[in-house]
Length: 193
Image (spheres, rainbow, N blue to C red):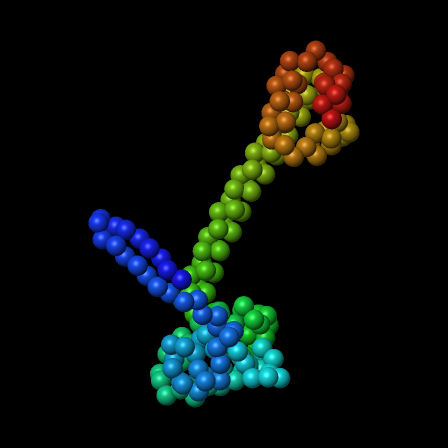
């Protein structure tokens, strides 16, 4: 395949070939002992009759046999664990690769931190939205109570409490201020549903 690009009067041509990892002989790459390639070996072609979990186990054994520092082995295993998630389920990966290695792996730590931040942000947004909804319901029921003597035990209060749409609650609040009677408000609510 070719990629052609012309930039500032210069012609750049890049030629590349797509390589499918599953088509490569994983045993040959595993035997090479090259730490830069080992994380990809679980995705490569495996020997006949060897399932993905057993192949991952062999890839881990080859990584453990490397004569490099423990930190380097852990980095290779962390990358291998992430890439293995394309062919193995998480339980299999955690049963073969130490959970400590996976939880301390910088990429996963970064993803976990980002997910936590997004979760907190989403929780805050939901809390604000829920608080706004509850406030709108309280305000609406207060107006009906002050103007028409609506009791909180009245089924109408429960109906209003079941409305999720804050904009709808605001519209009903305005209507509660303007309608001549509680019965007129009930008719308005019934007509809108």
